[in-house]
Amino acid sequence: MNCSSSPGAAGAKASPVRRPRSTQSNMSKIRILVVDDHAVLRAGLALLINSQPDMEVVAEAATVQEAVLRAREADPDVVLLDLTLPDGSGLQALPDIHRDCPRARVLVLTMHDEPSYLMSALAAGATGYLVKSAEPAALRAAIQAVHRGRSYIDIPLSDGNLKDLLAQRDVPARLSPGNPAPLSRREMQILQLLALGHTYREIGQQLQLSARSVETYRARLSEKLGIRTRAGLVRHALLIGLLDEMNPA
Image 1: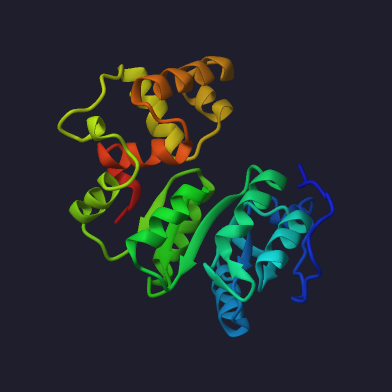
Image 2: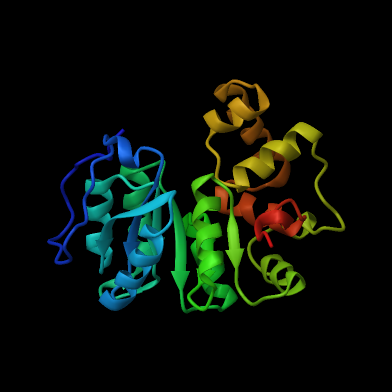
């Protein structure tokens, strides 16, 4: 399924690396859009990614506007996104990318290791967050994880500090680990899968439920927890330890 080709993106200057989705040689590969304003870094990332048997770079972009346009053109599985771009924050591209390419996962790759940037990325809908000082193996693992719909977060921050940070955000005090809202086993499963970025249909397939039933569980979670957004559910899942496995060794 291709992304929509609705108009509205401004003129892009980076050369696209467009590869058709239909060829036999790349059907099983993870298709990646690399968004970074440094051409040398893009080239290095493309060299590393294209050397992997299960992934390939299908497009590149250097600005927010180019990122939106290239996503529409290339229909990537994963968007590797820098935060600091010439025309704004990379997160500004997320609403358009999510609208035009709803199945694409976003992995932030940035030099910013401050917790506030991580929280902003999660709230905007990113599935993973990785600092540029990470090892190549971590980048490969992160791409594979977010492609599967799993969260991957790797910044130099202790678990305790991360939970303290989350507790200071707009999560109600009654959601602290010591006083969690009562959830059934099924609701905890739904919460975890929602926080990991799965769609209602994907959750239904895993739990043998209809998408409508999953939607009902989501409404019940929102009512019980007092949380209306997916970003809030991610924060709560992190806070109570449901995503402790998000950063594999």
